[in-house]
Amino acid sequence: MTDRSWTPVVDADAALAWLDGQECPLTGYWAPDGLEDATWVLHAMYENDELRGLGTHDDVEKGAIARGLREPDVVAGIDLSATMIDSGTPLGWVERPGVEWMRLYWRDHFGPSMHEKLAARRFPPNDRALRDGSWSASIFAPPEGSLDEVSLAGLLSTLAADADAGGSGEVFAFYGQVPAHNYDSPTLFTGRLDMVKDLSVQFDATPSNFWPADRSWFVMTDWDITSTCIWGSKALINRLRAHPELETMEWTRRTDE
Image 1 (cartoon, helix red, strand yellow):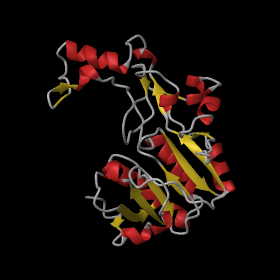
Image 2 (image 1 turned 180 degrees about the vertical axis):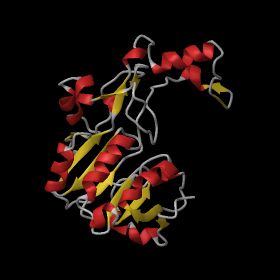
Image 3 (image 1 turned 90 degrees about the horizontal axis):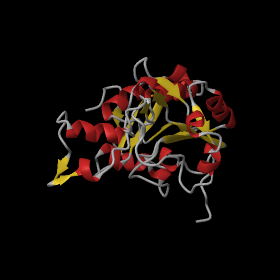
Image 4 (image 1 turned 135 degrees about the vertical axis):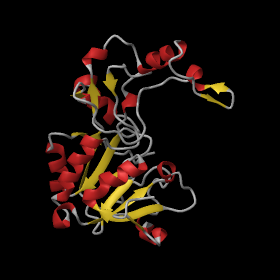
């Protein structure tokens, strides 16, 4: 059940018709052509120096199972804990960790070649393109499929400058079939921009897409990646690039394939 400040759209198919042909209703729509500029927000990650030396998240998990501190994940008789690697990447909504965790920017962790490596790939910016295996246990990894609390706050405060009534103007919020766990009908709401966090907490993820009634900007968080794309006017996108809490980068989708 959603908060009363969010109203399900009765004719969701009609409200989403302008996005027909844009990938993808499963995990999140891409914006149609026509908006001036775009940038990608890299979801925030953090580091705790006191946890250095513990190995990876996978090491910690398997060690806890070996010592009887937690049960293995067994599905249909298969021990997933033994056959799979725990990457340490959270899926869905995460809040800022405690004060012992310090913000770690992608550019500082991955180094100066990061932008070049990500820009050359066929797929949107994603931490999996820059690491092997499991994250160090000392790192609170960027979430997949959802903006984190700090990045969402920075994004909403910037979008509010372009919205009516100081951010309380109406927006549409869409959840793809996978994050909504609903393959029967579109999951689409209308509500206030400044209430997007409440909806995110309820769904355990920020919306796959949200946009204002005038369609002057558009946000996409694909369920399978650790970054979010925002399309809009050049002025809006430049304000996002300049926001001190948002780490952004440019990535252009290839159209030759």
